[in-house]
Amino acid sequence: IFKPPGLVHFQTAAGNSLGGSFDTSVETSALGPVVLRGETVLQLGTQTPVVDRGLLSQGDLVGALQSQSTNMLKYVLGAEFIAMTNLTIGGQFIQFINLDYVDVAGNGSANSGRYTADQAVMNMSNGLRKGEEFKNFGSLFLSKPIGTEQQGRINNLSMYEEGGGWWNRLDGEWKLNDNWVTMAEWNQYWGDADTMFGQFYNSSNIQVG
View 1: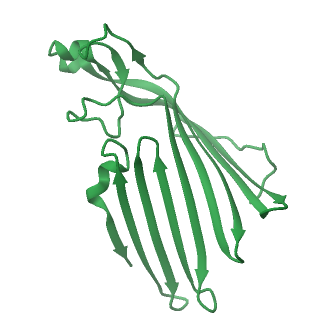
View 2: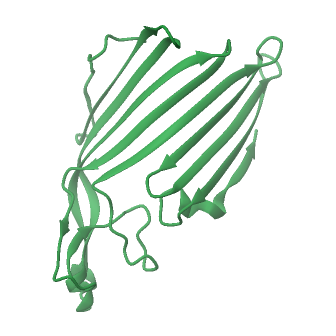
View 3: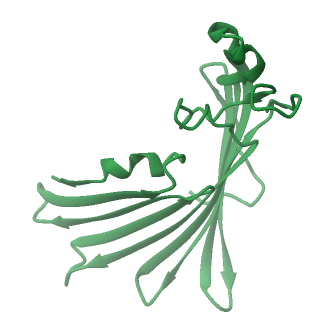
């Protein structure tokens, strides 16, 4: 469904989320029709971890690691177009914004200060890693039908996470008849182990169905 640019539909879910989306098509001289998309959600009252290094140095584990009610704004902006007859190319920019980010400087020592931790990767090995106020991602999507009657399709999604994390998904499907479709998928994770994607470097997998 194509809607005029700037027209956003808002709805609530579970009483703590407000979001919407839009998509539209514009004609360009270089790329032909380009589809522009956007999605956003405001999450109210999300629980995020906050670390107090001062209390941690005193052995107060309960006080040093607390959950704080946080408002998060997340949005996606994307565009896609068709090249080489039937190759779909799409790109996305994704950003998570912590509207209640905590970063209180201490006295300069490692055992002082208070901050919002990175919920996805924090652990003892990385010193309860500090999170980001603005977390950015970028992706590139390629999709092309195959077969004389285009009964198959190959897709590839590559996603980069700020900080050095990567995820690539290569998948394909082939329609045997009206009732049966075969598929295969390869997920590869790599990069900095202290990122959402990089921590799964030992969990790369192949799936068939």
